[in-house]
Amino acid sequence: MVLQSAKNIDLLLGLLTFIGWANYQVHTKPFLAIFTQLAISLVFDLGLNKFVPKDMQVMPCVNQKYLKPVTPRTMEERRAVLGCFLITSIISSFLQKTDALRWTPHMDECLQMLDEREECLNDEILVQQIRLQLIVEKMALGTPHDGANESMKHREPTSVYLEHLHSQLQSVKTNLLAGSQKNEVVLLQLYSAELEVALPISFLHTNQLTFQQRQSLNIGLESIRSWFSVFLTIAPAAYVGFPFSIFSQLVRCLMMLYRLITLDDRTWDENVIWKTADTLLILDCVINNMDQVAILGGLDKSDSPEGHICSQLAQWFRSLRPGWEARLRSDDLVLSTSPTLQDFNEISLPESLGVEGFDNDWLMDLLPWEFGF
Image (cartoon, rainbow, N blue to C red; front, side, top):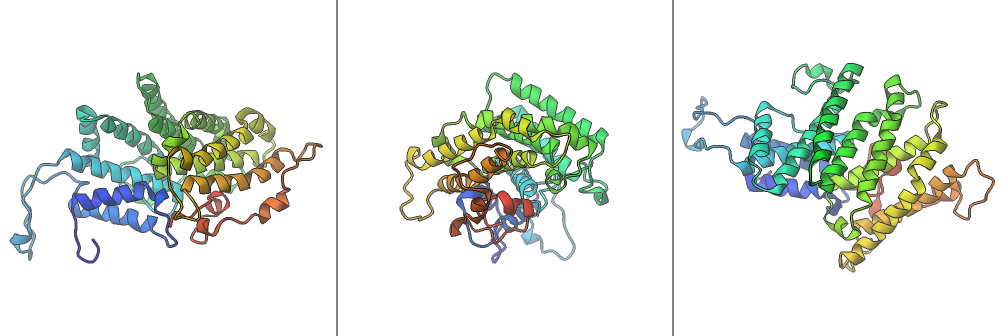
């Protein structure tokens, strides 16, 4: 693709599939940031983010034999550009290193057409996911998502704008929960979006909470509880097909829950977190489910000493538990038989889960494996 300057829809779809299941593409060198930008460049080269011109445009000094005839936009192309936005936005939100494909008026039209035609069930799911991710992307930008005023990008949203986003999210949530059929993937993204709007990444880096953040603590906690209430009803055998987005949501939910537990703020009672969210029980359930995936899914990982990615996750979450329990029982007189916090800090992760490629402090603390960012 790079060497021969090849560009076609098949390459884009293959690239999006590769990125979308990046959790199965474990590399020792960074690749996600590079591959997402390659996908975005393909969208630009193919012109999928713009309206199809009515007439063939002739550029000066360009041989007309290289010009392709104008063809109507296909539904497959519309799905591809929407999928590229969804994947790149999720990765941008999670890694905090890259930008997502910028939303355009033509993509608005693609979303509307996909919603109206719905040639298959997955079209409806994609539309719902896009609407939720648009709200998350607006939150990340901190300004209205119209592509204007680039200098305002990444500024903290005002309280008025936050209320607007919460209103939009509540409207989408009401429509989703009112439907007769509820898809688990969409529900997981719904509660993940709620969490991101309530407690953005900036919440992880300070103990000096703003008024808005204090107001959002309970909302964030409830979003985490709702997310796990859906996740833990899914059979472990189904985890085999999970895309990167669900694993990133899992890590974010656990990360935010731990942040709430360790929050140094007198107005926030960390013991309430444990009692309300049943954190250790949640962690134990996640570990137990992850342990079952390879067996229930009939996976043969004999050629991989590290085992399936879910087995690696279970191993890492299990290494986290003593530290979490030590924090939970730090004020109790009962002695725990689990390793002490010092023992926990000395636990080394498997080499296959190396973190030498990360440059996100919060990610270094909580993410167990290198996706090759």
